[in-house]
Length: 185
Image 1 (tube, rainbow, N blue to C red):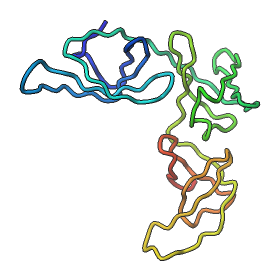
Image 2 (image 1 turned 120 degrees about the horizontal axis):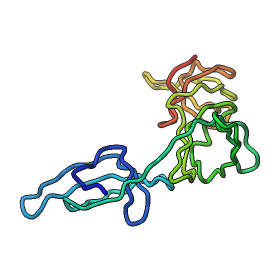
Image 3 (image 1 turned 30 degrees about the horizontal axis):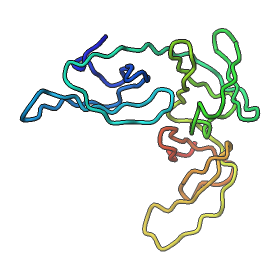
Image 4 (image 1 turned 120 degrees about the vertical axis):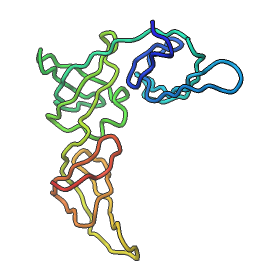
């Protein structure tokens, strides 16, 4: 059990029977009454974020999260198949569990599988990945002064806004957290 005074970013706790990770916190002392802790919590299974306030001194149960390296092998139907890097065991994960991360899964990509009490709850992608541009229309210059961009389709089917000089077949780096173009390889 930990108290609100032990909060730190990345800490996994149980709140109202649900597993959350602290993404931001702030100690607040109003003029009248006791101190409170303002917290942003990310649900470990659903991925949604909520804002909560707790009274100073409240106690919470900590959760242990383990990580295992996996290789993405292939997609079959709505399931995505991964192989454990140590045991070579294969697992099939439904697309609902992965959410928007499926937009960046390509064969042989190494990811980290996150387990909460031996139950797979999510995966972590590398922050920057290389992708091939599958479809790119011609760049048309408009009336803007700078930052001329166009939409392209990547090998996984995801659309990304890139500069006009990017063409079909180019390899680019994409930020998986924001879904934005980083640079051409």
